[in-house]
Image (cartoon, rainbow, N blue to C red; front, side, top):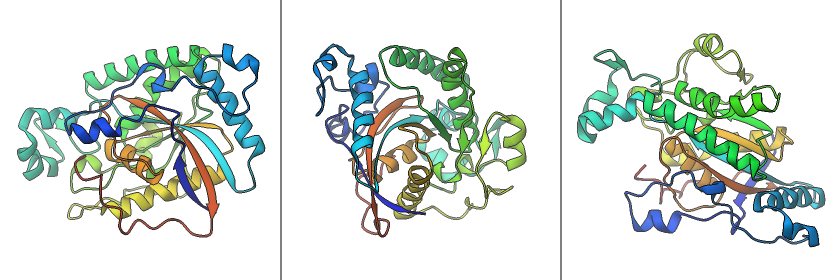
Length: 306
């Protein structure tokens, strides 16, 4: 598989990292038109001034790829954090300390399943509202993602389906996302990070394609181990290399988790931005083929508090 260095192209979307740095409690929510900056691009013709910002960007990306040197690719990458799940609701109920010290290690509490946590009604409502917002983005020229990818955790599969299946159906397009193991959250000893079996996923979400090599049982999660930040960044580097090397789509969607979204941003050279549950945002990512993947041995700053 080819290796790439990824870079989020600056000045395409509003950067919320400075506000996140100034206010540790701040979390980004879905912005009007996904916070695209209304601007011109190299190569715009006179007609471009009459286009909506998303229409201009989509045309620019096509020009970039058409004129790119071998080994260079550009993609619009939509990142969506899942809606509120049972684990998020439980943290609110019991408090962070009780969650970290005890509850997070349990499979369930009072009939509430925490292992591979599902969406609560609030999370379902968030995803339905996000789909409505996405309909507006598409009407304003944002391209519907040509390829959809998701973490295999149930809450991400639910969120992606609630957001994007209606949009595909309205355009008579099939809803057929691909499940990628490496899109999962940073592994902790919390049971909410443990995924269900391949059989469960295939039976519960038959509309999803499961990538080759996906194991029947979860071989990544451990009850006595946290994944290092460096290992998590390397995992996101690998999955992006996989997607960019095999998928020619110019726009893709990744349904993921809070630390996973932050890690993708970091792999693309961005500073930390924290996102609320049920939120989408976008990047324009440039991929340049290199001899070896970047090393993340020193990359610990900026991902600590998620």
